[in-house]
Image (cartoon, rainbow, N blue to C red; front, side, top):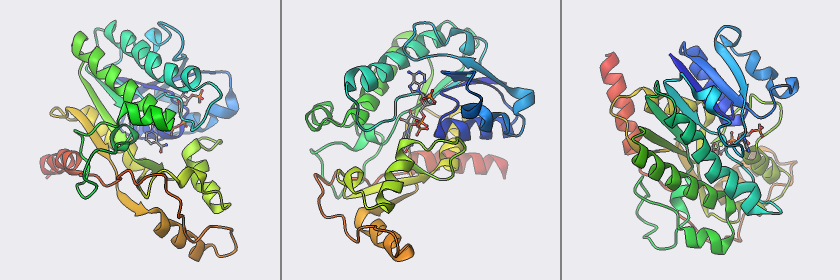
Length: 302
Ligand SMILES: NC(=O)c1ccc[n+]([C@@H]2O[C@H](COP(=O)([O-])OP(=O)(O)OC[C@H]3O[C@@H](n4cnc5c(N)ncnc54)[C@H](OP(=O)(O)O)[C@@H]3O)[C@@H](O)[C@H]2O)c1
């Protein structure tokens, strides 16, 4: 079975490629710079890569760029998207590549008669940036972050994820494409690529006493990268998977995280408390939907 993974060299996608290869899939990964050996070496070291991995150049900003990679694939995992907190020109650097790039990928999917399902990597950022709900009630997949709130607080990454996911749902509905979305919380775990992704830098920043990235939320959801990769494959393979799937393991209060880290690494300048929240956007999720899918799989195996 052949599948495509966009942005294959990224933090999340590299683990997904690893898990797909281990499951026996033939994987076509898209990358922006196939000649960059240093950036891609970790992919070629994965088990099964030499036999079943192909890397193809594609850029979110180029119309029809994904045609070649996607043609003939049964599944498309669209993970590529700008992951950065700030930008000199947020519209050009974050919003347009996320939204137009997603539509470019989906237009290539539409041309592919072999397509069975598209799995889009969205984010819990597309769920939790709201100020109009009861923080005592955990969020589920029916929740959407407020576009207006993201704009007014200039949370460009969250805005890009909401707009890209909404655009994907609309396009897939109009064009009869089977779409499932995965919404991971803050992804942690070992990085396969040599360069750290921006979320890992956020945690590293905390170890250096930088609290800026933790000011938005009172607490955050965390999920291991391997669980995120497996979740993508679960919702791709499962016949009954549909709609959005939150993907989160634990929710940790920022102050608990800071005090745990500072107790464990007393010589590092980690603050003991993070007291300046802009807001307490709620970060507690009902994980019932994906758990039900998983339990169904276990039941089938037994
Ligand atoms: N990390 C998290 O905590 C987290 C949580 C929830 C959701 N997500 C989602 O997971 C996905 C992967 O994120 P990540 O954490 O793995 O970050 P990452 O390592 O920065 O990966 C982002 C990928 O997107 C690609 N990309 C960016 N702009 C592109 C463009 N114009 N054309 C083609 N490819 C482009 C990058 O390619 P280059 O390598 O060429 O730059 C990279 O492969 C994203 O959709 C992100 O929103 C991440």
